Image 1 (cartoon, rainbow, N blue to C red):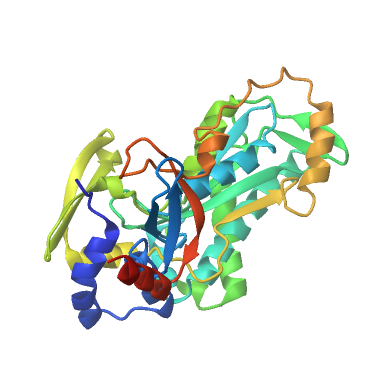
Image 2: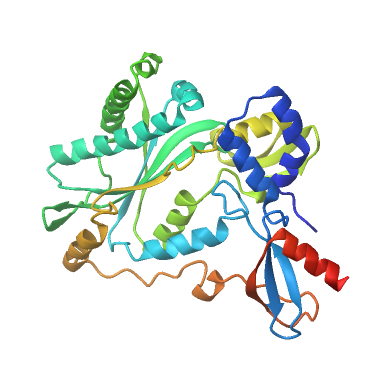
Length: 363
């Protein structure tokens, strides 16, 4: 039985939504990609059975980073590349959260707000590292703009190796936490407001609470957990289609986890317009990098500095990492629907006209 897809909701409700809401060019573009994904509008892939030699056509995917159907293979390949950079040490996981009063800026200038968030979080950690004389930290940060119920909840997940590089010497941080979260929250608030004021003085006029939230999760020790965290927090989209329960022309129901009620799984029903409004507010600006690396993990120096660190780490090497998706499965393959025994092998790509002509010749 065919499952419910986000494209089905867009096909049935986007026309009515556009009559009552103004959409940005980027939002329209993302909707077009999601609606055309694997429908044949983007062309077809030709796959041939290695047993009966029958050629079958499969619609091309849109490869949009917002598409929930196109992230599985990209996630597996990205995680495999990141495994080479894992260090055999503990990792700290910090979450920098913006107060909801700043959400209004995301509606008018999301690029500036998100850039300031990355900048403020890294400057906060650098200030504490300098004060503690730790040296240079490394950080992989990932922007999330959503909560479980698709509301706007802008926060930054940061994975930080438990150590610092002082010139060419690696110093492990042996404490159970990186820095006190209350002190981090205070400094982060100051850095964020300063960054907003530097970007646009009108941003600093937005009223915000005096207490901000920086949350520290439990340390990660084993590489197996780190790989799953990398996949979960770096390539995860706004919503997995497995959470969709039902949809009509008027309403959409989906599953969510209520953190305020002991993490219970619940079902929320929204009007189609409200569901699309919540979903589309998380469309990122074109070209915006939501995954960024800092310090000794920065792209410009990562290879050289990780080489220095790995040569000095004396801890017991981590267990061999077993990726969730094996190497041979990184190449997609399906069983033949005709002979039921063969496997389809990719042979080429056809545009819509070529596929139409081929169907006409064989019919």
